[in-house]
Image (cartoon, rainbow over all chains, first blue to last red; front, side, top):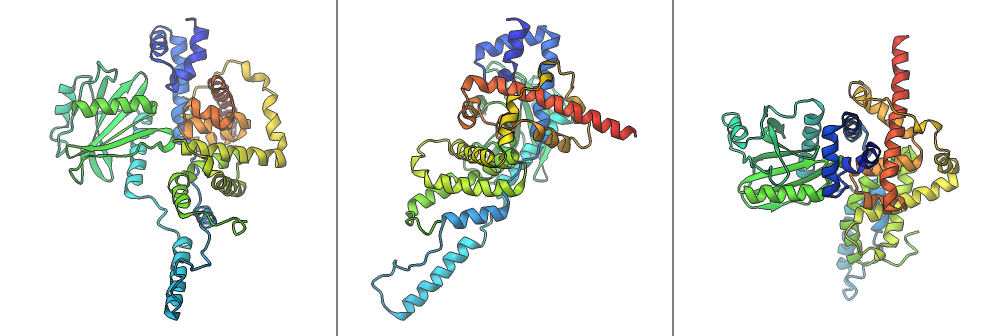
Length: 252
Length: 186
C-alpha cells in the first residue's frame, strides 16, 4: 500500500475499525514510514486531548425531574381499590396518592452510586497515565519482572499474565490509587491502544461480571474473580477489550 | 399533552425507565453540543424523550442508546431547519483551506493551560455535520456502524467524515492558539 492508501485508512486504524489483516499492514507500514507514523501519533494525541479535555455535558437534575414526571403522570384515580367503600380506605388511598406523587417529584438519588464513582476514578487514572508520561513505574514485558515489583508496595499480590501470544503484550506496572486506596495498574497494549488493568482486593468473594460501560468514550469492563476486583479500561473497541478480559480471566 | 393520551401500562413504563431513561446524559450531551446552549438542549431532550416514549413500541433492538440518540439527532435537526437553517447549509461550502497540509501539532494543545476551553471553542466552530460525528465518536465512543445509523450517512462515509472533521478541528485549534499566543505577547 502507498502512503496515500495508508493515510486514508489511518482513521479506521485509530478507531479500531479495521479488520486484523489491514491492521497488520498498517502497523508494518508505521514501523517503516516516519511521515505516516508522525501523522498517526498526532491524531492519537488529538483523540486523547478531546476525550480527556472536551466537556461532557450530563443532563441537569431539573431536566431529569421534568422528564421523569412527564412520563409518569400523577395518578388521579384510585381504582385499585374499587370494591372497598369505607371512608378510611379512601383516606388511605389519598395518602397513597400523596406518597406516589412525592416519590415521583422528589428526585431519587440520581447522584452517582459507588460503582459509577469508581468508574469515574478509573477513567481519570487511565487518562492521567496517558497524559502525564507516567504510564509505568516498572517497564518490562516480562511478567517475572513486573509481578515481583509489586511485592512490598501492596498488601496483596496482583496477577500479572503473559498475553503476548494473544496479541496483548505487557508494557509494565504502576502503583496507582482508586478511592484513596492503593491499586495495582498492570499495563498492556493492543496495537497502539493502551489497556490499563486495575486490580485490588474485592469487598466480597463472590464472582461478579459487571455491565460494560462507556464513560467519556472509553470502554470499561469490570469483574470480580477469586477475591479480586478488576477494571480493564481502554480506547480499544469493545470486542477486542472483551477478548482481552476473557484471556485475563482464563489465565488468572 | 400527556393527559390526553391513554394511561401507559405499568410494564411499558417500567421498561422505558430501565432501558431508555439511563441514557439521558448521552442524549443531553449530544443535544448540548449540537445546539451549543443549555436552554435549547433541555427543551430538545425533553421533546426527544416524549417522542421516544411514543414510539417505544417500535424499539426491539439491543442498542437503546443508539436508538435514543437517533431520535435526539432528528429532533435537533428538525429544530435547526425551523430555527437556524443557515447552520445546515454552511457545511456544504467546504472550506477552501481544507486541502492544505495541517502543520498543527496536537501536543501544543496539551501544554495549553486552557486546553479544555480551546477545545470547546474549536469544536463549537465546526460545521454541524463534523461536530456531530466527533461527539459521537470521541465522547460517546460509538462504533462507525452506530454513527452511520444515528447521523444517517452510509457506513463508508463515517471514516472520511471523521478524517475531515479532525483536520478541520486541528485548523481551528491552530488558529485559536495562534491568536492566544498573539494576545499573550501584547
